[in-house]
Image (cartoon, rainbow, N blue to C red):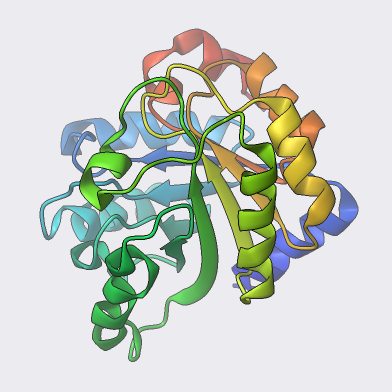
Length: 241
């Protein structure tokens, strides 16, 4: 398999938009994996992300193994904790929660992860992760004990994103959070995009194709859709190949 990151960069350079379906191991029942992945395969999705804020040990690996049986799409770990790391995936978004100031999620968890990663075949992609307020508390906020950046503080969001790039992050991920009441506004995406030279991921609260298209138009290189893809048959039909 070619470098996952290089493929994302190449798509960005060509103006090709990418779509990832995020699957939470804590919410996906084993008996539903086949039918769900069949839907993913029929859609325009280009990647599968696997992870969640609170997941019991072993669930992520079992889910990745099950998914691998039914798709050729690249699987990237989107881990909320070290115990979610498994060598069965293709790569990992090595997330640093740069919107917060909890040292555990800036560097502490990463140090813990090294023993699991140093002998793995996972492609490791350093990713600056920014949590943006969405109108309700998210599990990321609760687990990480950090506050999201205010939506009105666009300059802070932009500067934080750029700082992530200058620190060597290869991706910037703007996240409204699972179950967000609304997606990140296009003007925020656009302002961040103008300052970055690296690919931009946007996720959280995107429930319709129109919202996805709006994020793309504003500058997202890769959009992430989570539970909406599973719960909304209309959205699935809108995203069929």
